[in-house]
Picture 1 (cartoon, helix red, strand yellow):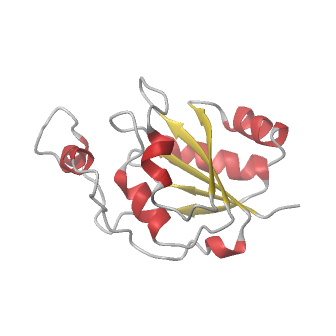
Picture 2: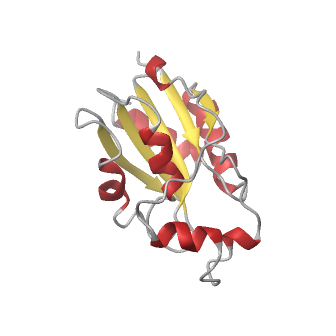
Length: 157
């Protein structure tokens, strides 16, 4: 049986709740991807072209700093990575997370929350942030923890 980790970034709490529920349903460990500088409500105003999230998402090389490097991904075979969808992709802090650890030979399973969109080009946008031996699997958007766990088990994860 593989060891599983649920790592997540949540700006408003929605993804956090899902991640905690998923970790419980999967019997997985939990790790929060925290930005070094927390996002404020103003930072998340996607209607403001000068808002921090807008600026970061327009610059694909943006790598917001994370608060710590305590994820210990080396201890896990399967890492579920959750996040809200921003501009049809993962927030660039997810690239920071992936680039901060060695994911060689790991399986990364994505899950996301979104107000209106699917994964879009998310997998493509994250693939360059991990070693070629890491497999990134597009999971589910806006699924419940039970649905995610059932899907993951059906995939042999």
